[in-house]
Length: 408
Image (cartoon, rainbow, N blue to C red):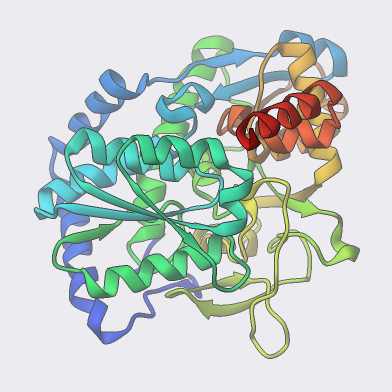
């Protein structure tokens, strides 16, 4: 599937000369690790003993009965350590950092889950840690900022540009250029220059490997369809990768924001709003204008609020292997509310995008069909955004009282 970092026309490594040696070192370390028969067992062991893997597969009986169609299963990445799939990638990259003998890690984060996971990994392995986060995301994901700082990370508030994820990535790359000898950039999603798309999806593939075994144990057959949200693409590729050669429909769900007509969304693959371009070191679909300038994006979910998408997913769109849909902010809140009430599960706002499309399609399936939803993270990080969306008067009163306490 991969040829020097290209997936058909997508991917590559468009780098300034100063970074080429650093990327060559990373490619070498990653390739050596993949071919080392002891590496994956070491990775699996630490994910088991430290990060609670394998995460369970939950049969959503109440939702299944509610929709009256396919049997609905949920892959519970929310139960992974730090509350999301992000730990899978950062612990793998942490092992590579140890192999390379570096002492400092940096990362970007939008929803904050990758930042918390990276700070956790750094604490465990004894690395210095700096996290770059757009100022807008800092405000809407304050609980995660709190935990990053408690874990010993320095959190840099990025105030340039649109002050969201793409700007945090740019800031992290600027840091890396000046600190290459000691520092590794723990990129959080399957984007960026080679080898990051392949490397991140490699570590995230543990999700699909587990899910395949688990669904065969539960049902004796593979699912009809698998749903995952799509920001950069790491959780989607994580669950899709092990099913690419099977007769299973794969559906990625992007952030529809306020709707396509509003222009306030982050839809790259399920509409004609995006075009192919090169930015941040790789070639893929970006939301850009006719002059190639990146547009502003919007999503209720900070982790999906990104202008680009994995080059691997771009290829899978082009060859028709993955179907892409979108979910609006309001649909996400509605699906989240239903999931909480019916199953007692609280998906992250990012994950709830996948639930939206699964809920739309579940009634169309026959009762013998199986659908699988990747719950990539848990929603406690989103409490401010969710409470605001629900206009909860008790929560609003609590916030007001707290503010008055601090003022006093």
